[in-house]
Length: 153
Image (cartoon, rainbow, N blue to C red; front, side, top):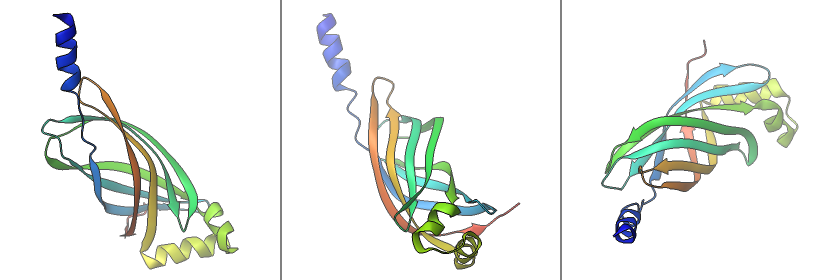
């Protein structure tokens, strides 16, 4: 009896991987001599019939092939089944690392990005989810040209 219950519950915990549909609502929230700070939303689609618990997001943000920020954020939120979901995240991009790539001074690089209003952002990492029975780690590999608004305080 115990074995059949265990088998039943383990078969119910198959999680189909959600996918990133888009990066939305990008806002430049800070600009200084070291970083460009962005708030943005990852638009995810949950193809599962039931809700999933979003546990954590661990990824590397890259621009122009340069690793600029390690994002490590924990969440305690649910993503409804068969729906899209916006997952907020913060990214601080190191101007020093970006300027090394093409020998540009830091302020020139920051101002160029600021004035363009757009960047090619690549996200590599993992999203950890749970269905209440088991956890699933979803690989993220997403590149997108994002336009951003300027909301510097």
